[in-house]
Amino acid sequence: MKLYSVIWITLLPSLCQLQLASEYVNLNNGGSQGKCTYTFVVPQQKITGAVCVSTARFPEAFGVNRSEVEELKQELSRQQTEIEKIKRLVDVDHEVANEMDHLRRESRNMGSRLSHLHVQFLHEVLQKKNDSKEVFQGEDKVVNAISEIPILASKYRDLQEKYNFLTSLVNNQSLIIARLEEQCQQSLGRRHVDQAPSYSQSTSGALSNSSEAKKKQNRDTHGEQTDGAAHRKEILPTQATKTTSKTPVIQSEASQSEGPWTDCSEAFLAGQKSSGIYLLKPHNSNQIMQAWCDQENNGGGWTVIQRRQDGSTNFFKTWHNYKHGFGNFDNEYWLGLENIYWLTKQGNYKLLILMDDWQGRQVNAEYDQFRVEPESDFYRLRLGQYRGTAGDSLSWHNDKQFSTLDKDRDSYSEGNCAHFQKGGWWYNMCAHSNLNGVWYRGGHYRSRYQDGVYWAEFRGGAYSLKKVSMLVKPNKP
Image (cartoon, rainbow, N blue to C red; front, side, top):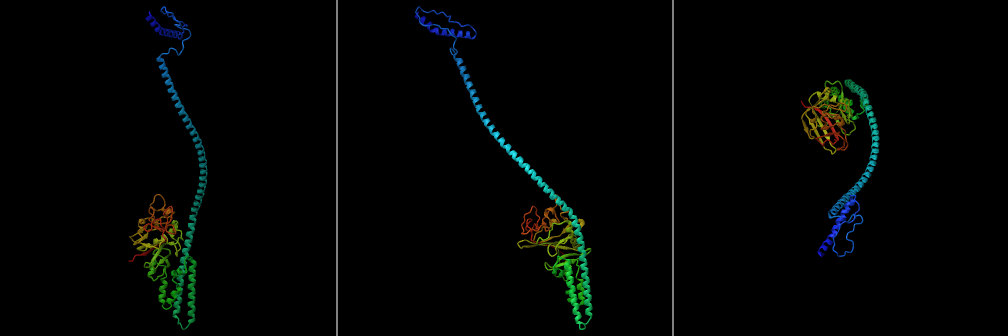
């Protein structure tokens, strides 16, 4: 009996718990509130205290089983994980917000910078417009200057014609004066000196005055010539008088040897040994020219066709200038392509080029054949074999036509070499030599183009020579 009572007492809490759970379910399902309806068989032993209590609503936290607790824990863990994710997202969003803040500030700075650049751009555009206006004005000036070139060229041609006319007139007057002096000397020679000595002296004085007047007229006509040069060119009549006073026949021959000569070599062979300005008239030429004859150096008889020595003459000239010649015969000058053509057409000529640098070194380049073709072939260059100490920088230009600023005949397809080299020459593509370029003082020069007076084989294209002379002379038969 005791064992039976113990079993029931042991099972009583479990049975009561099941009853309470069942009531809880009924309450959740909408059932009415009940009480414990179990009947217990207990021993006849008196039991104090409540055996089964079923009063109020079943507590929520009472009687939850282990699986539900686990599910709640799992749910709690999942929610904590979600909370962590949300926190991380919040942190990321905070960083993104900071980054956006920074980007907004950068955007504002960039906007202000762009505004500044826009203002600067507008300023530069206005400046460029002003510069363009200045360029257009400069171009207008250039166009006006170019339009004035033909007018100046026509005036120059008129002056050249007048100069040629005056030159021929002076030459004719010189010949007339020489003939008159010859006649006077012949008439004086027939008379006896003892009959009229005073008359002879007065005649000599008159002849002396006549020769002085002739020299003065030559100096007035050729302002560029010195007294010594005029003396060499005209071959002073007073010297002829002194020579022919004793032998009239020699005087007659001397007056005939006064010129004009076919070239300086002929004058040298005729006894004219002094260097200076001579009148020349090549065979078949219709006009008389002037040229400097070098009768003292390198065997004499050389006709100087070009000379550079101090930069006093501008060689950046037009075709008309290079055709007819320009400069000062006592200083820097270019004889003229037309004159060079008639001069070298007479026979077999050679070319000698003398060069000095700024350190005193002297070199030369000689070509055993030299001539130019007529203007119809644009004065094409014809050269022979080279020899000398300067190196060959002209053969590369052989068979090339002459080019100037206003007449481009070079082989360079990208532009006018005469414009780049600032001169006139037998340019190829463009030059190994440029003896008619810009005369720069001191040798080495800095320029956008190689436009100095240079000979590439001697000191290179960036070195402007101090002195240059081009001379021609007939080859010995």
